[in-house]
Image 1 (cartoon, rainbow, N blue to C red):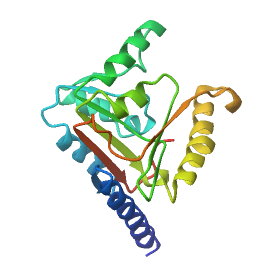
Image 2 (image 1 turned 90 degrees about the vertical axis):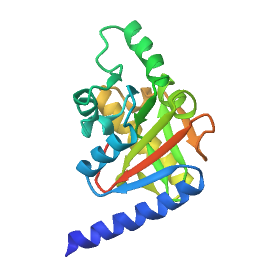
Image 3 (image 1 turned 45 degrees about the vertical axis):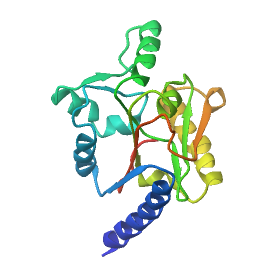
Image 4 (image 1 turned 120 degrees about the vertical axis):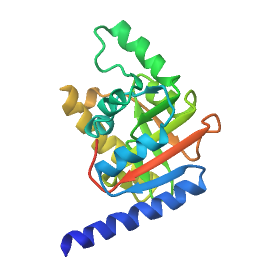
Length: 200
């Protein structure tokens, strides 16, 4: 019974958010779980030959890179680069793939999307470059206003990533992108909200 209540709350929260994202030009979907999310992503990227994946814990929790490779899709991602030079080259390549898939740091119920980024590839791929941009976010990243999403990004996502990198939070440096609309240079912009806790 209690789980049903939680699921209903999450779905209603996500549906309100997706309605407002749709008004801002995004193609939107809600999925209950990881399996449904993976299936939806495969539908979206059908026919795509090359996908860019920047730093994204969510994408890796979903095991999308392995899924794409199993389907014969070329994946460009810098996390396994053997040098700084190779990582920077791959960051640039990620942006100009046919599709670019990652997760925002927070989404507001009124339709704002916030992305934090140090190197610039996450921001660049979110406003210019790929024909298809796919954002995936767990319900834990939904907040009630732009003020709250910025707070979540800077107080939660930054701290979690500081722990991941093993550095003091005061040393974390980043730029902030706030998307109020789907960028006009992006031909197809998707937002998938998942009824599970995902990512940082």
